[in-house]
Image (cartoon, rainbow, N blue to C red; front, top):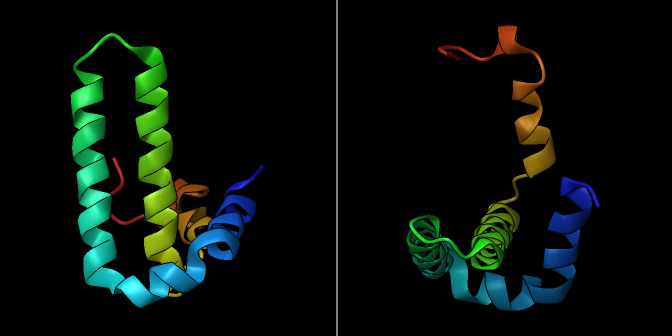
Length: 88
């Protein structure tokens, strides 16, 4: 599955509820998941790390959806290094 397809899947399954929650509430859920990922990264449980990476990405897609951002399109700037200002 590519990024666009995953983002669309998240929209289909959760879009209505996500929009009702709005950006501020969704951002708080996203940050909570980032915290869980930070904790997982300090451990040795690979399955937990994978689960938390997936959760963070799913919530990032939710934020993108409710803010009308196509993540796959937004990431195109990384395809051509010359297009990213300040890219190291």
